[in-house]
Structure formats: structure tokens, C-alpha cells
Amino acid sequence: MEKILVSACLMGRKVRYDGGAKTSSDAWLAGWREEGRLVPFCPEVSGGLPVPRPAAEIEGGAGGAAVLAGAARVLASDGSDVTAEFLAGARQALAVARTHGIRVAVLKEGSPSCGALAVYDGTFQGHKVPGQGVTTALLERSGIRVFNEEQVPEAAGYLRTLEA
Ligand code: SF4
Image (cartoon, rainbow, N blue to C red; front, side, top):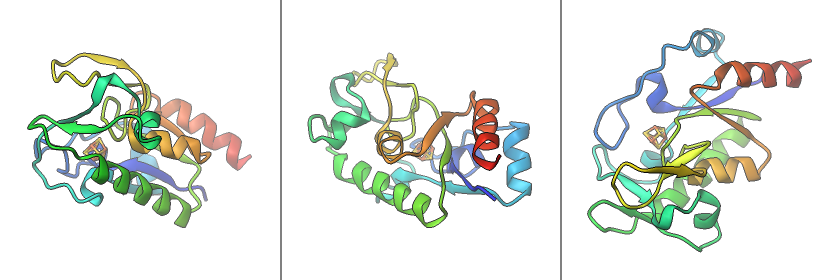
């Protein structure tokens, strides 16, 4: 049975920067949880950041691939450089995924770690730009398909093709 890596905040864990969760009521996720398929994970907490913590964005509106390449940093709203923690969390997410043989992930959109299609532009003004978070970029580079919480039906379809 294929397992699925999922952002811990979507599963109700209070690991977000503001101390809250982003609990998903998606029926697919509920079903997969019942089946024991879900592996909840928070890259930022696993990378060593506390809860709560200052919001963070990738500088210059760059994507996670630029951070992985050393071409952009991840900065917190207080100006501190949290790139190392984001990279550590991404590597741990990949290690956990490999441990479980995971090929599919459902991650929280817009996060500088977990975003699949969009991230914030680095100005802390609430502006999103197309791009991936650091963990998403590393997972996808490693052959793991990442979907956001609005794309769970697509993730289910992909899972079906893997299990066919
Ligand atoms: Fe949720 Fe990912 Fe942010 Fe952790 S890093 S709080 S799992 S979006």
C-alpha cells in the first residue's frame, strides 16, 4: 500500500509559524488516514524552528530550487537567516519519504517549505508568486510528486496509476 507524505498542519497539528493548524476536511485525506497511509511531517519544526516562530519567505520571490542551489536565502520577518533550518527540514522530509517508499505528497500551498505552486515574494506584504517551497522542490527533484491541499483528487488519481 502506497503511503503519502502530508503536511502536519493539514492533519490538525499546531505547527504553523503562528502556533495554529490548517486542518483539512478533505474526504480523501480522511480515508487515507483511516487506511494508515498518511505520514504527517512538518519540515520547519523538524529542521529546528520553534512554534510559534516569525513568518519566513524566500528572498526575492525565488523558488525552493534557488534555495537548494545556494542562490537564495530564506529570511524570517525579523531579518534572521533561517536557510539552514529550511534545508535541514527538506532533507529530513526526503529521508522520511524514502524510509516509507513514498512517491506522493500532499503539502500546504503557499508555504516557503511546502508550497507546490506558489510562494510569497519575499516582501512580507502578502503577495504570492508562482514557485515551490524548499521541501517541495527537493521532493520533486527526487521523483516524488507533490500536490497541494486543493489537488487531493489529482493526488488520488496519481496514486491509482501507481497502484494499478
Ligand atoms: Fe505546515 Fe509545512 Fe508550514 Fe510545517 S512547514 S507548518 S507542515 S506548511
